[in-house]
Amino acid sequence: MSTPPIRIAGVIGDPVAHSKSPAMHNAAFAYFGLPAQYERWHTPLAELPDRINSLRAPHMYGANVTLPHKLAILPLLDEIDDIASQIGAANTIIRLPDGRLRGTNTDAPAFLQEITDVCHLNPKGLETVILGASGAARAAAFALAHAGAARITIINRTIERAEELLADVLYTLDSDPIMTFATPDAPDLEEIIGSATLIVNATTLGWHGNETPLPARFLNNQMTVYDMVYRPTQLLADAKACGAQGYDGLGMLARQAMLAFHHWTGLTPPFELMRDALLNTM
Image (cartoon, rainbow, N blue to C red; front, side, top):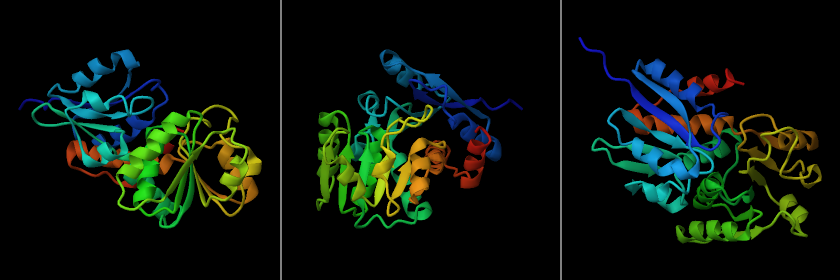
């Protein structure tokens, strides 16, 4: 009896050496007894077209996509599903049986499940501030707007990117929440932050040392802070110190991986399996 061919999936990013995704997906492949492996693929922007094209090979499942490529991959794919099209960013690529590549976004449903099931917040009527205008920020804004958030404010250094994000989200809605933007040096930033029920950090600030996207004095005990960085951060320490509820992005990372794995294989690994695989790498 011949040995089944090894199927391959991986994560595309720049940088990508820090990614914990191999631990989750390889644990899931082992759990289901699939002859497959998951790899890290460091891919500078100039090499992105060749990397995407390599996913067409018959032994490929597809890929996850992380910073900074969640927007840049869109024109390189053969098709994009409704959620990725509406968000304007894809974090998962699926190789179809005929070799064509489809993009989707598993960040948005994973984030919304975290907000409702873990943070115990009802998105409807939420006053939210999102820090950053990345692909992850787009997913969060899309998820919250479609779930009925009352106000979403994007804080980003580049006004043009924040305006584009808000315009893209509003275009997908039948009714408009209040959506605004500001820069980190806005004179009323402390007031904007202080009036929010939910603060979402979708920047990379927090990966290194004690860097933080917000001064501690901006936080209060009436808010929930969700940091997409999946490790303890200064922002979360400051949230805890003032009595705010704080959550890191580990659960979101595990949930989006579960959804991607299902797209590739038709199987859904247990959340606990993915979470524990992540925790074992910390």
